[in-house]
Image (tube, rainbow, N blue to C red; front, side, top):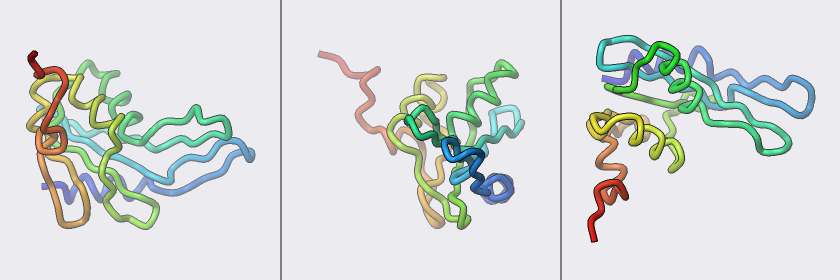
Length: 128
């Protein structure tokens, strides 16, 4: 299911250094929304830690079009290997829409799980 997204992400996973303070593209992400549109993004790393993940960049690209439900998402590193989303990215995806619990997430080159499987104890559903 993620093969087409992996190929798109690989196109953008090309590390670049701009001025000694900013690097990008060590990780690239591609996502597909529930209506079949595809969005992508690259990581940004800065000397003062103000960068962000490729998944966040792909989500920002998606949000420009007013979409929030993600069918599938994958991130790859510069060598083309699938890398799982960090906790911050998982949280962002889960807060965009309750439907994103069913988002298919690439965890490694052989594993795909739902976002709900990555976040079994979601704080938004916790009850005292």
